[in-house]
Length: 187
Image 1 (cartoon, rainbow, N blue to C red):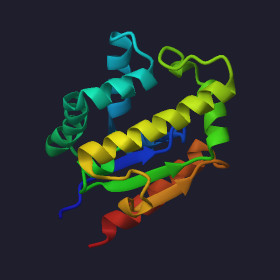
Image 2 (cartoon, helix red, strand yellow; image 1 turned 60 degrees about the horizontal axis):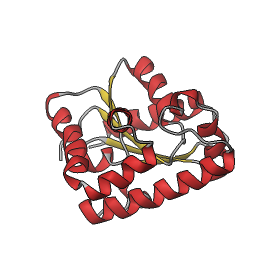
Image 3 (tube, rainbow, N blue to C red; image 1 turned 90 degrees about the vertical axis):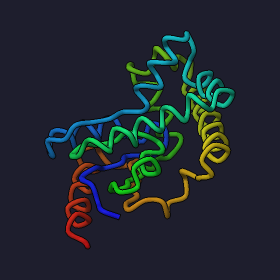
Image 4 (cartoon, rainbow, N blue to C red; image 1 turned 60 degrees about the vertical axis):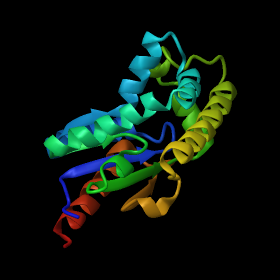
């Protein structure tokens, strides 16, 4: 399989994909394709929070398939970009596949304090946020297995796995850039 100059950035909820991708875009002068932004837009248009939208997707697999297919279609005609998608590694197997991990308590605090999430994730406490994140994680896993027969949390799917719990987005981006450069040189 011929490698493409694409970084597929997947990971745990609130692991820092958005912040890291912004740094990579600037440092590498790459574009971006965000499945999550598209899903949040659809959820908002439907008047659903993101967890309810995940439940909706389980009942409407054609929409989930359309969302994932859009990433692979985009990659056919584009190069030099970041794909920010849970299944980006699956949709674009010729990409450099990165998974960002994070401790769930840290993730819950990050998500709770992220004002950009409030339109589709509005919780009164960090504990409510955490419970919802665990519920979403499990819903996604079930849906991805049912539709695609893949486990996104199987780390053998990735070229690089980074725990972001105690790292800044800049530190994570630097690790990715270093390893990506090595990957590009490998035959």
